[in-house]
Image 1 (cartoon, one colour):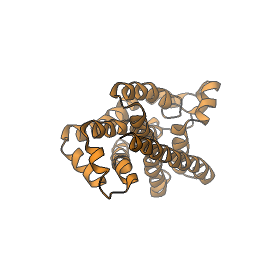
Image 2 (tube, rainbow, N blue to C red; image 1 turned 45 degrees about the horizontal axis):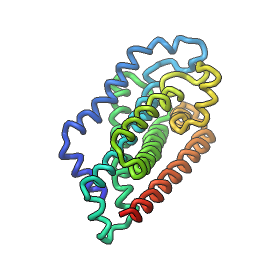
Image 3 (cartoon, helix red, strand yellow; image 1 turned 180 degrees about the horizontal axis):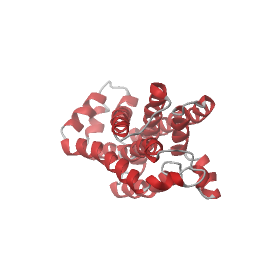
Image 4 (cartoon, rainbow, N blue to C red; image 1 turned 60 degrees about the vertical axis):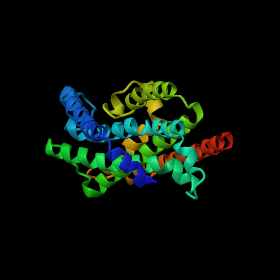
Length: 248
């Protein structure tokens, strides 16, 4: 089922190009616009590009995976999902194939951004292990939002509602995190919100692993909460799928 999702994407070259080009624009646009922010006292990073690479990767993971529900809704409208229900394919595979596809795409996209950042002068003191944590955390975060989007598609079954909710959530979730600004320089209320923001959990895990002296407790604690949330989101999507099955 995941292979089927990849084949569908391969037939849309424009989507593939946009998926790869958009993070590049964010990386060098934000990198050029805010490069002097590191001069602020307490920012804690010598290079803004070093700081920005995890932020762009995580933002890309969120923005790409939030639209998984649109694919699910399209399959409902075309009757494809209903036809698959009479096959022996496991029900979780029907729903989560696009989530897995998006997670693998996120991993590939993350590697591309890492290489572009390195070409632009970014340094990765945490080495290969730190970069691996970055890629895995982005993929897990993508799973959270992909599964949530699937559940949303099953519940609302309206494109306009999915577009509205995604548009409403994307920027607040990103900017109420340390994606582009160090949390120490954020207003106190934003710091409090960021502690409960899964986007920030992924960023904290990534940046803790990418330091020259990694903070593995931060990696494990934030990564653990992220994994629990991913499991809960997948469970929610399966529950809404069972409700959909009973309605057809």
